[in-house]
Image (cartoon, rainbow, N blue to C red; front, top):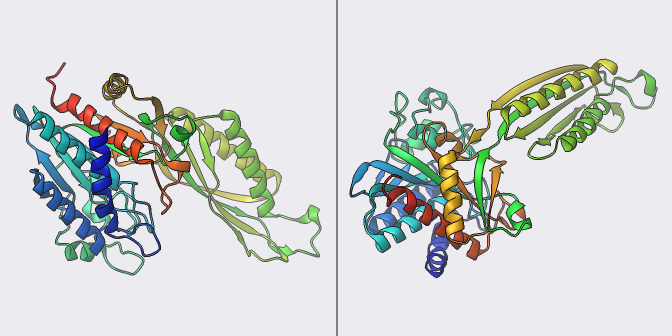
Length: 412
């Protein structure tokens, strides 16, 4: 454990210093100077430790130790290097750093693996600068369409293609050819929740990444004078929203884990003290690990909202703009990861991920698994994001032992 703890204590500070905000936290957006400096410095560090390093066409960084027996079979591990604005120093980047530390230790301890071990520092996952997510992992698997980003801009009006060019990369004319040499992908990540901490467990073995359905709902009633409009005459959209919110969350609580439901943004109009709000726009985010149950619950939710609005003489428009199915992790890898935890006497739990991760993109094409480490108070996307260094070290150790199983042992 001490070797991993020492490595984390030595390597995490310099990585976190790149893109550090003066008041705390990190801002490292895709194709920004801080992003480019980070990728270049990480490449330099990996090369100095004997890794073969290279960038792909869109800026994903790779560092590899070539396998002695099956060089064309790649066991890949890493995560994204970009952050949200004023984010923490663990989300994303620690997964890439940990993969390098783990593979470096394996190579120094056991020599060359049978299968090629490869670190990936993914170009982007967060979508914090441009309106596109999973740019890094989608390109590796050939899922990214260059036409989807060709004309998009950031909040300052800088075009995606121009920012990319400034970093030395050129947008391809067609989707990249998907890699077919990746035999497994393992992602280490902080939990971004408080389940592990609350249950005093050190490692989460992720079984699935939740499906998500997101809505924008518009309620249209009638704006009118707050003083001269009797209660029985009102078509008050905030009242309708309130009923929808309270009744829906009550049903979500009855449904129980792992379903979660969030009303995240509410905009009443005209949003002034003395006018009955004639229009209210709000968002809904619903997640579940079971696709059928997610569809069934949200379908009932839609019918309930419509019934409330009919009763209150309110018009309703329901826009389902995100509909992502749950993504299970590979059962064989989950079982192998459990075995690693038992062999190392690690206190672990099987759990799902309530947030999206690059692993869900990889899992559609290659055997994939995820390892979670505890998050203190469940805080993430925040400068206060933190994990005890002993838990970080144990996460790296667990990753290293899993990569050993996958890359150093003959197939069972």
